[in-house]
Length: 205
Image (cartoon, rainbow, N blue to C red):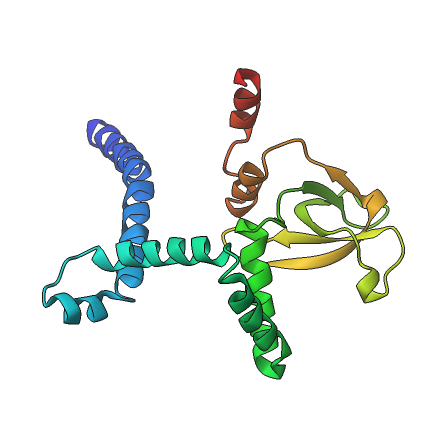
């Protein structure tokens, strides 16, 4: 009995240690991989110039370049140049699909016309109690010839960075009074992440 009790206690401690270490280890490992990949984009070019290898210098230079381009792009001098390349890529037959898709996706997260900021509860068909959580991405679908009271709703998958786009009647959706970021985390984690923190944030604000 003592051996069995010792084994159960040890097993419980093992899983408890795994619970503590797994998120930290996976997060650090992921950041290390991303850091190494981004740093490697320019590091070989910088090493040739400086004749010395400085870890992390590549990502610092890249961040400075992106910030500098963002600052210059808002000036009167560089706006026509940015507009020229934008029109050039938009008119190219094959490049247009890639360019506009990436541009819209990036703008959805960091641009002025952000998407994924209106979480909603979607009722899947009439007569069903099944509901899904998603985000309204477009309320005006006239360009698709859809003039009824319908909106575009993106339903993300759990444990993945993918999802599906659905055209949903307005009466089938209900706004969720919660932070869009926390709702996205809730979906991706398959409901494991607790949304109680949202109520705490609202009560303290």
